[in-house]
Image (cartoon, rainbow, N blue to C red; front, side, top):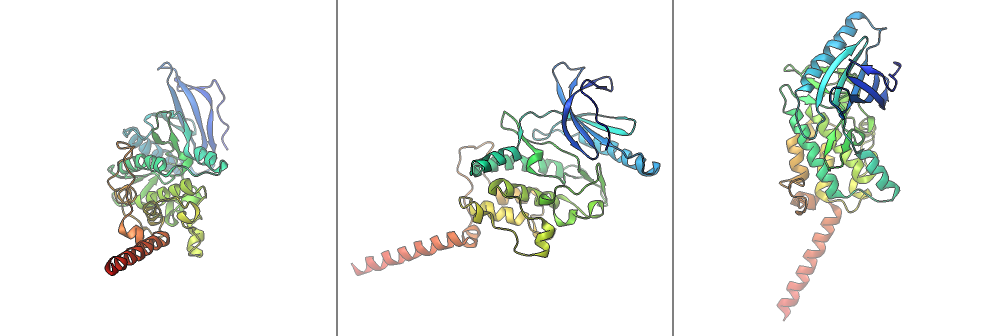
Length: 329
């Protein structure tokens, strides 16, 4: 575990450490003041390269970091923090990003759970629309960028109501031959990790891995329950509790989209983020149309839901009784 920097330390003669805002085995994330731009706060993500590994492996890791940092610095999207700088100091590499104010969605979810409430579905779908746009942008890069660690704690809601995907710790750039390069090794967080990602860097991950994590994130946020791990579900089919069995007010369309995204096998999920967004939201854009009706359930949604099927049969029965009564008149 590397020794973290102290408050007041200045890196690269520009970034003055304010405090630690995140910490892990590979380094820390610092809140820092940019001394060249008065009043600007930034987040410094630190990656520590273990001096005990061979010089060859260490250099490969550092080269990978610099290649990926160069790619991330070119990104420009309203739902992603802007990467403005990257540099190295001894055995540590640094990525400098805009500091995103606000609270992460895991905090909002916890507050709702403590009140024995669920987050409002319309509000969650509004956040989901923004996240989908960010991931469509990442996946549309050449080569595509896969985040691999989507979860509520990596989603920040700013005071202006903008959702930002804030952590690029496990990001992958997909090369044309489908060999992946990783900034920081890891598998993500178990509850949101698809089966194919359990192999670490040996596992094949692509845009469908982000689709799974997105679905698992929505499951957690709309049910207040962490989804069962993909590995456990593989060993015990049927282990996943249906979202509407937990949150009965949830729309059947939202449930169906989430379960589709959380399919264990990549071939059975939506094959792109655009497809998942369409399944979840249809033509509804909650960002531009916040007061418009939520997307109506499709016929498949209605037929797939026991509750809606029951209502349909009751309605048909009442219609039949009404028709008979009319004929008898």
